[in-house]
Length: 141
Image (tube, rainbow, N blue to C red):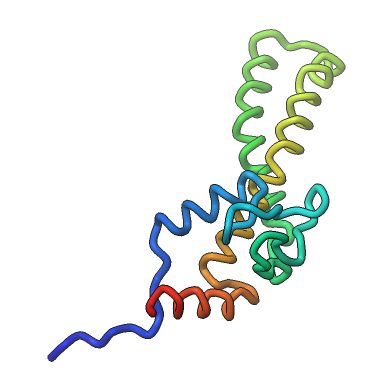
């Protein structure tokens, strides 16, 4: 008995990696030419280069949670080490840790949100189903 062919193609790791890489750098996950954002964290409704609709994304608070996880894992060991070994006053802690916290947080928000939007786009989640089906039909033809 022959195996039945599926009617859809699964995205391969190369496609997902390419889409995430493009979006991490603020480019359209589809073409890599248009801008993903129209403002700091406001995703464009559609790509200015290829016309891909991007307004379907539902990243919500997930990028912030991921950034908190990353920044926390980077800074908490350093904060604990400084506190354990030197026990500086609170204002020294504030001067030491506020700048890297702000820089890392603000610097990581766009790339992380871009990666999440690209994953949603490539996997056909949250309104991107029609675009995924169209891509899959073109790749099968």
